[in-house]
Length: 110
Image (cartoon, rainbow, N blue to C red; front, side, top):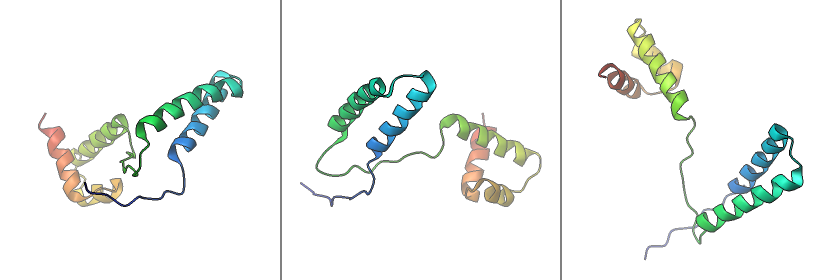
């Protein structure tokens, strides 16, 4: 069995998310904090039981959701079709020129 080195994190992402969710629920639905805290604690406990282990999991947290990415990609193709250079699009959207070309080709072939 290959053992990997434990990664130490300064912050607890589950605890942080639980606090934000509890705060948002209290504000959005005008619920008493005690009631919300019970529900959030139950969900947090369930996630900890499922995800916790001896070794840290390394996971990817996306910067954008699919809808935002899709809108961005459509705008890239629109800009390209209006005559924008790929190098300019690359700088504007913070993507490599290769990725810009991939987006253009994937959306213009449909």
